[in-house]
Image (cartoon, rainbow, N blue to C red):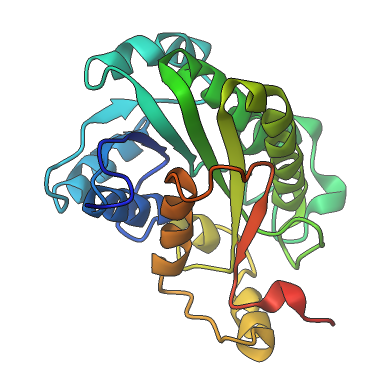
Length: 256
């Protein structure tokens, strides 16, 4: 019996098989979960293609976290597949790579900043609240971050958005804890995902990790990160909330 046996999990934000969310969905199914996946727009066709690799193939629903109608109807659309939710995975982030990343920090207009904050940080709250009608006595919300306690080369307004995400998770833990909802984040090292490739200059992250991560780091291997997410979705962390779990080869523990 797997650690997610009998649980229903929504994984929001799967595009390619290199996505962290894809590996989470794969491992969650292997651990006994019923998985539902979301994406939106033109990326839906890519998601549908990669989901055919999973057995069983999870249902795919459209969800743009900046679309109020999508959020308002989410619970009803999820009920077409499951009668409740035990967990939600937030694997969603966006910042305009031309104007908000790659060294453009000082000249980014608030329109692009606002979009990044809404999609990358506020959506953790809006998604959780949209799913909340399906939560039972307990539920686990897990998001993904790139340790925003520091400034990183080229990360710019996504770094600010991730800092907001980390704070938002702590407030979700505060306000939803009395209702049995846990909110935690996994801070992963740099991984070769579509999101990373969209960041100008992000290849410098690999150099940093290759030099400083005590355990080493393989940027092509999403499994360690996905395992941490699955563990936090399970009942093995019943008294853990508001936490940020590092899966980065130990780099966060080293000095400059």
